[in-house]
Image (cartoon, rainbow, N blue to C red; front, top):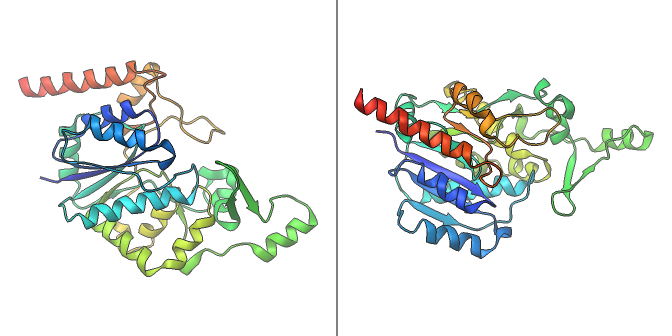
Length: 302
């Protein structure tokens, strides 16, 4: 039977994180990275709340900012910690603290048992009409992006139509490293152990590629796709992140899912959904759990 490792990046709503962990299969490995900006109290709360779960590991090693290279660094750090642990696993599922499984843990395990060494990660070649308002995604990689304060970015060369900036753009436009084709997609994925090993080898052997992403905005939606879709494993990848999300045009992130979204969530066929906020609508989480229990009881009695 396949064993899953869950990697979860969290920064708020810690009681909801505990609820999420309690919905994951008990035989899985669970690595939680707590944003250092959340303070030691957050990590201590999770350690105390999940103290009875020996399969849960709490890390707090990096300050993580939205759209920043720190998101990639934190993800890599837990992947490295997972592999170094020598614990056996077959698949890695990457989640945020506001994701939630919409099917039972048994259903997820059965799905993975039938995956036949296939990884699931949303991907599209850049430029793509999916990121049309960012020149197909090229704005993220063709310019230098510097964090100024908090989550704000300064872009160089400045993206304006002045003659000076047009000249700067010709002089300083960035070239994607190592002859690779850039791919984008969702930051949340389900990868085989083999894919994880390949990623960790790749970043060791291609430091220039990693350095390039220090100045890419929202690079976590390009970094892993580009590595895998340019790799010998590309034919073992399905273009799907297995996660339902509700987007509104022009928004920088998915909508908070609420009880009115339940029919759309359940009809999506996804294993997970995001994003939820128990302080805005906990009823949707209750409904999801009741539905999972009802389906499980029907299968046991059927």
